[in-house]
Length: 428
Image 1 (cartoon, helix red, strand yellow):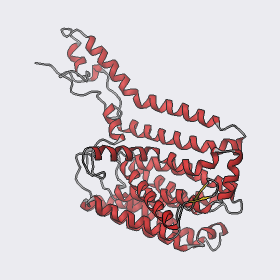
Image 2 (cartoon, one colour):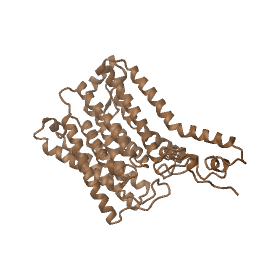
Image 3 (cartoon, helix red, strand yellow):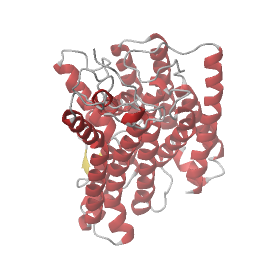
């Protein structure tokens, strides 16, 4: 565990230091795009944070590689350097495409082609979905394994990129998701391969945690630096590769044997990658359906993502981000508990179901809270006598009133203003 923590810290320090450098250089040379109509931020902000994250990842890998000769656990990971080089090469290609898109706004077909090439490079060098814990079932032929792997990586990359719309959202979601996934891979390997605690999946998860932790201070609201497409696609690539590596680096027979007495834990390798990506995958699916129904490209931009809808409901920027953090944490931790509670605590797995149910209820209440407040404001407004002195003051809060300037006014900190503190708009 100490090696993993050290690897994450190295990645975080390199990423943070380079993020500061890139932030200053970007402002010095005005390396930031104009604000787009769908953007939430109101001032030009550099989008090259993904470069710092990539260099942090490369730096951590090179440090680990340099010490692999002296540290036997690391030697296991770097025994097949072709896979590591393929991952770094694919990451470099994705970052280059992301930077080009942030600067010149590439068309979606060019970006998608680059994503398939990067995913194909990783799959070609052996990081593939070979088997799932379903009775040691092999995923068809080698060609089928290659195709499924490529499409899985591209799907996750785009899902992560789609939610990159609020300050700190992708970095925080990925930090939570990969932190949980790292714990799972670490504990899973202990159960299935006791002699090999170090594996590619855990290493990648730890590195992603470090990269996100190092970048988040500059990306927290109000953000001084965005990761851009380069960072979001990089995070998606590494998360997908980490999840896929689990199927090729764990003992499938051991997982299946574990599942005979505990059925659900045997399916966690399938469930958990979807759980940690529940928000990105949901947003991606809704966006594709929405755009296809409108006769548009599924990769065309709009302002109807889940984070945009939370803002439109009345949440502040910070509240929207924290709510999406909460959904991610509940889904990923809940699925992890199905594995941890029976195996390490001797508790029945239904406690994990209780955690998920309570967590989802709490998240739902917090998500829908602005609607309840809006209903209450509307009821008070509609019940107020139009001739009363309070009518003009309350009208600005009524979502259905023509005199309303804003549905729910927010102060600079994102908190709702009381009616007394709102400007009065007199109707003619």
